[in-house]
Length: 480
Image (cartoon, rainbow, N blue to C red; front, side):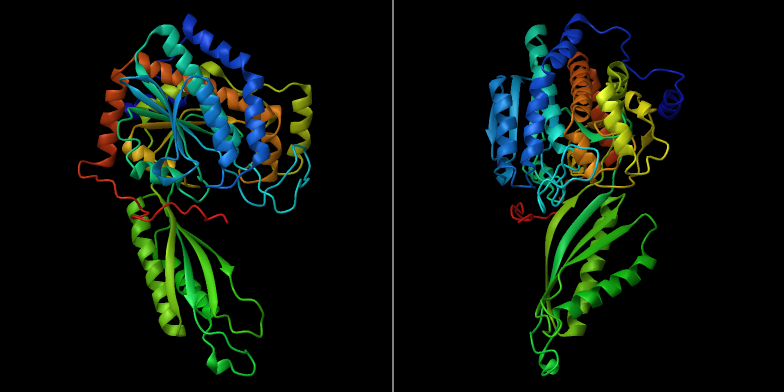
């Protein structure tokens, strides 16, 4: 029955559950309050855009978000899960407990000015090419709006903002899940910057990464090559075997690598070399199995080249378990909020920046549209550490048009738009949608029961959480 309903929703023949033709006076006040604070939150987001701090190094970004929440009346616990920049901010008491996720890390080497042509602000500097400055600020804005609604309505319950560092390859949320910080949460809401507005129920790819290090003996490559044992030979032998393995894994698998250290000079046998691997698949158990095969290839490469190999797991994340119960509510609220409208200056910016990439079928008008609701329980594309959260608590997410339509993530175009009012407008669309969704859940506690039942069914009766990271500590220096 649910599949039929979802099909009718996607065709626009019916509205999703809890659709609101009329917002209550209190809900209208929530939206008006977010509009009133638009400039305040834009300043916060832009400050984090300027900081552009990498994973586990987001000291100023984290502090700014913590202060914003503290000033609004939240109690803040900093440095959770052994991560100095991770925090949990709470307001209210009792059930339900609704969590909102906030990211704030940048990407290396993505410096870009807020202009519609390529302009590096500082060579080698990082930049917010995935829009996490907007993500973090928008979620904080939503949490504060929900707090105000709890006060005005006299509703009981707890709103909790999770400050989650190092999403980009650092798996910050996994350590927070492993610490039990989501064990008592009834629903988790999140969003992500994008080039369109969507609240579909979608999965992602599970992912595990590691750095493989090969140790040999340095020697003069011409005068005494027989004395050398090349770490680079170990890397290349491993790569060759893994590439042969590609024929014998499922078509949905993804394996990527780079050589992060290959030697210093051609006439020196490299005594040390290092590669960085990612292994992905829609199912986390497949990732576990494939990763072990990659390790075996590395062990064989070391044996064959007379080198010693060791590896360090950097991150490991589950695939997202989409929760249709919550996603349908979020989609309804996104429809109520609507998309992003450009003024003349924003339109000129958007038209100019679209000339720097192929936008496909994306038009500027799509920034103001909400994409049809769909359900995808099998992941494609990228990965996110929201996955681990979604296996522990019912979770729903959305994206908002913070970038010019057709823009892809991890691009200078994303950095540029994220530093303008286009990004700020999309951020407020997300904040409004998250806030209304949280309010719906507070008002209808039976929703959390249905969402929990769906989660239990999808993850199976025998599920026991076991992080892909094992027992390693957070890699606080992985970006250094």
